[in-house]
Image: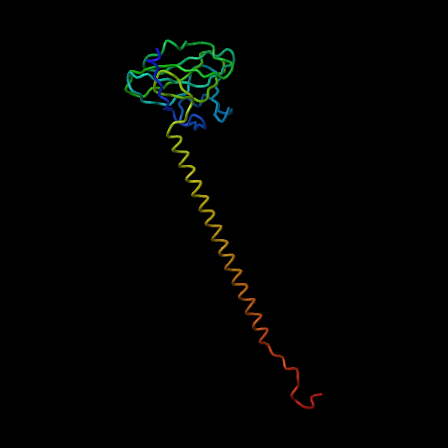
Length: 212
């Protein structure tokens, strides 16, 4: 059995920690007002309409979708892909745990177009919450990791911030140089005034006789 375990590791879903709502299908049915350990939490009251990203996967290859899942005691968790087969190890329509629990299901697809791996609740009025979704190749869920694209994006953002900071420092230095030049100019003018004052000569003696 150990020889049949395949672990992929790479998260195929992007931006699964600090999320952008536009990345996700059905996101209009989910609230994103809660944060746990830096992760944005998706919360939905009602049935179906699971969160997904449209993904094209290799046919006949096993993949695993995992997430931290929490229900309100009545929610029932289901896994769907739209095309392919599901692992028998995942029990459909089981009661979602009431404490944060890492859940996963394994599937393979027979589709040559995009699929939508997702978790859904089947009980009307029940609350289902998710965070830290990870879609990876293989049949065993591994710890959550960001997609490589997320890391590249963060590095690019950091480079932009460093460049902006460098530009601000350069502007400050330019302003300081301008102030220094102004001070030097003012000192030069003061020196000129002092020199002119020192060259000022006052006689005092009246050279015209009998003016009183």
